[in-house]
Length: 280
Image (cartoon, rainbow, N blue to C red; front, top):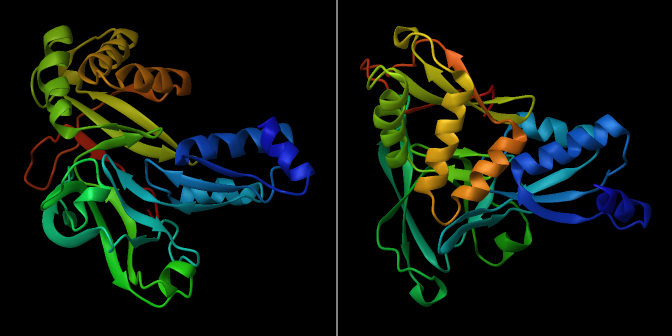
């Protein structure tokens, strides 16, 4: 924070590459302590850049651009003149893109992204009809930015996941969510499949993840539920679990909610439910 303020004082506001939640927290701290970071440009990744986050950045005079990345590839580069908050140019020189209908955790049908590497030497892993786990709006327009001039005319925006929990720049895959809510938590605290669920939402521009526990389960030790979830995440993510749990612990991201889990339109209880903020 002090470094950002120093760059503003020197007349050259900084460019900072970080997850969207970290940028939001930095701006909230700057606003709380009266620190001037106006003009700072954040280059964001790792999670959705939503209207709530954008409002926090604007409140301190900061701006942001977004890029879209995944392990082994960078499908989208920031648009210089975005019409949407998270608009990126498809890296069509290295990836081909198609869309397939997929079902979100809430039961909605969305246009999932499927990519194939057309220049496999540029990627650490070869991708052939790889489902990214995300969906987006795909459009073609003349935005007038540098990438458009180079011939990158395909734009992605509204990028969201249909199977992953993404919070504080950390990703938790859907397959591991099933094990957590259908096996680990019922074994430790009672109940069974359908009694537990993770719910991701945004409050004041910051992500929150609720561990929803059905009242049918009876009394539970809520701190122990949170500790169990964090331990499971750490154990099932050998390459990043410790970082993930520490970030969630420091940010106080997890909490327990006693209510019935959300159901899909077919009355199924998905392991993850995402509460969309207005305009996101």
